[in-house]
Image: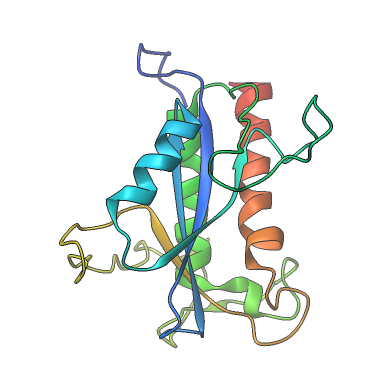
Length: 191
């Protein structure tokens, strides 16, 4: 954030797809990316790999709102009205990815005290670590090519599903979406 703005620092959107894998019900996979032209990018992503069902969960800035012609807005392809772009989407994407990588690696939301945890949280591999005091970053999982399309998919975060509590079935709404909104507001107000 210290670097001055460059020509690549353009306005745009942060979008999220859920990639549904019925073979892995204990985790949720969310693709979080950026786009300058939201409708075009969503269409491209849908054509890149059709191996698993992809469901648009949302984008920032923006919500599903009523259209001017009184028909309801939608997350359905072809009915999306993106709205106004947010500033510096490249930088925003980086901030969002940093926090989501930490949440996916350590899964602190599985602790009933989250977000007010004071004790070290467990890594998803079972070892204990404190993200703030850890001397080494979370281990990066080697990405393998998709068995269906051969592409190495990036920007896909795999979160262990909460089995109970307020986050059960609401990982997008209560964990990921607030991260995007928080950093989106920060970039819009402070950068």
